[in-house]
Image 1 (cartoon, one colour):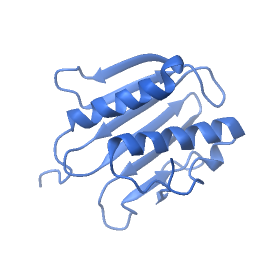
Image 2 (tube, helix red, strand yellow):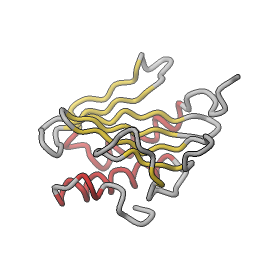
Image 3 (cartoon, helix red, strand yellow):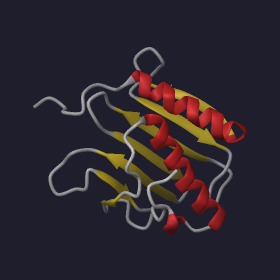
Length: 143
């Protein structure tokens, strides 16, 4: 069965990169398209900030038909905001750091790459300032 999400959306990944560079440029230590910029599957953005470290990474995927994944990781912490259509799972969902296998309804309702990226940044930054990853999904339809 073909993937209903469609192929990776290159334009969306470029838009995501642009927003991240615009908003977090001073924190960005590396940007990489995996496996390469010619035929990317994922955008990886490494930042010089984190909850318990000075290095973290967002791995981003965006598909042409629908769907995205913003996976955050640092040494002992990970979470993910995502959008995919699957039975029994909220379309727009959040995998909390306390249990990354769990899928809760996401506070992000947007579907445009720029707005979703701003919302992910807002959720991450608010939680970072609070020093509490438990509040990552507590905003109301950010940004």
